[in-house]
Amino acid sequence: MFFLPLKNNRMKKNATYIIMGLVIAVTLSFIYYTYSNKEKAVQNEVYALQPRKGSSAESEEWKNTQLRAAKLLRTIQSDTADNKSFLALASLFVQEARITGNYAYYDKAAMKYVNEVLKNDPENFEAMVLQSVIYLSQHHFAEGLATANKIVAINPYSSYVYGLLVDGDVEMGNYDSAVSHAEKMINIRPDIRSYSRVSYLREIHGDYPGAIEAMKLAVEAGTGGEEATEWARIQLGHLYENTGDTTNAAMHYAIALSERPGYAYALAALARLSLAAKDYRQAIRYYRQADSSVTDFSIKEGLAEAYALAGDLAKSTQLQQEVITEMNGEAKAGNTDENIGHYVDRELAYAYLNVKDNDKALEHALLEYNRRPANIDVNEAVAWVYYQRGEYAKALPYIKTALKTNSKNPTLLCRAGLIFAKTGDKTTARLNLQTALQHNPLIADNLKAESVRILQTL
Image (cartoon, rainbow, N blue to C red; front, top):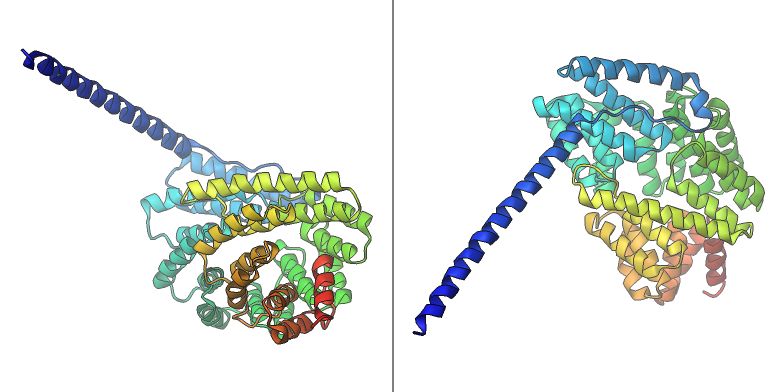
């Protein structure tokens, strides 16, 4: 008589398993249905231009861009097989992202239209080029480089593709490959794109005179007033900043602003010069004007610094928290979507350092390091976070890697000198600090002051 309850238990278990199976089946069906509907919604979503901010919203260029975008949208809606128009619209969105700083929206929009083409034509050359451009823009550097390597196998004579390879190699820390690809690029087509990449490679290998020479050629190869030309002019000015020549830097920033009125990066550059001159009110004015026309975290951080130096700590703190919140939103998108979404962990590491949250800074610095362990900028970020945490021995191997290209960037060398000083290598510390400060470069006041103080003790 003891078997009857056992049989009932077995029947109850079977019923439970059947119910569980039905629940799982219904749940999976719901998930599939939801996912399918979400995919359809993404596919059917139409991206249009977003309103511009600031003076660029009144420009003739913006009016022409709007007309062109509207025409392309009408075309692809009436002919879904028109790959040429899909790619023209994607390319327009990529350029609009550069002009406005609204990468989160425009890169996603561009990638949608690129994928529409690749779905039917997986080896479409122009679509693959744009896909690599968008990956690199979103800091998905490994994916951007992998795509560029596929493209160059299709067309080994495209200067533009070698530019993508240079960018991907630099970001992944493949500096020898980057130099090789830059040589091929400039041999095929010496233009603003190739000269600017040569300039950057010379800079990170410690050749500032050569970097300035190449960036001058880049500016001369461009057309005055165009975004790419004035961007190159701003980079030229920054090279002068790093070598202590603020007169030439100011001249080029003024020219850029004259050639492209309201250009945010010219305004931000002039703000940096105003900060160095301790004219905090003027710096705030420049930064606010720049911030009103583009979306760029570095400009907001500069404005936060200007407010702090001017004594308005409340506004400074509010801005810094806004930056962290916005960056975290982009980081979340980057970590949850393998195709799009901006990786900003290195930038977040510095943002958290600004608010003295060293634990969060380390978390994000290491996240970026795990993606790009050979990149010198990433290693510098990890080293500097450890320095701020007082963990000097841990900082040492990362700063050594950051110095592997023989970069003479004054901020890097100051940080390296401070780390070497804290770990007992006074000779190397002195050499780095002296090299960094010899031309009185334009770097953060607190870093310069600490470097001068430590150098006097060595």
